[in-house]
Length: 162
Image 1 (spheres, rainbow, N blue to C red):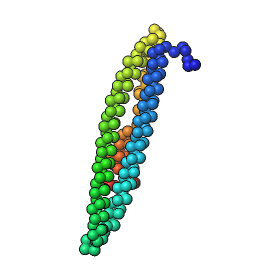
Image 2 (image 1 turned 90 degrees about the vertical axis):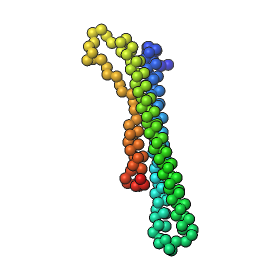
Image 3 (image 1 turned 135 degrees about the vertical axis):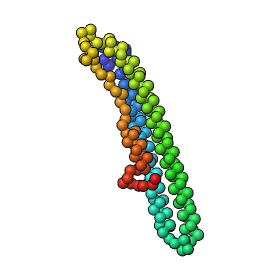
Image 4 (image 1 turned 90 degrees about the horizontal axis):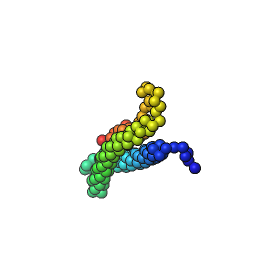
């Protein structure tokens, strides 16, 4: 059995910290999936662009009807993939703002829960300098970096779609 010397407030705080850790891991998983989707879209767009470049290199007089149709198809496919990627980037921004609000709410919750525990465990002789600083809520740092990668499309080394 777990420690039985914990006060109910300490148990509640520990549960909140575990819940926060779970949220951080779920966010990280979501960010990784998002990045994988973006990388795949960039690869698909690059492949289509390469095929389109070979068709564009053919002089217009020498193109067959099928080559002209394929050129149009490729342009449409690239356009759809770019739109899909734009939606993905917009979705990432909405998610980032939602997570920022969740972080603010969790920090406020932890602050209100830590105050009563600090008062109960603080000895009358301890000075304010000895008071423990509130730990900042765990927060994944990949969000900004991941978003930068997405906005730059896969990074400079993979493609230059935009």
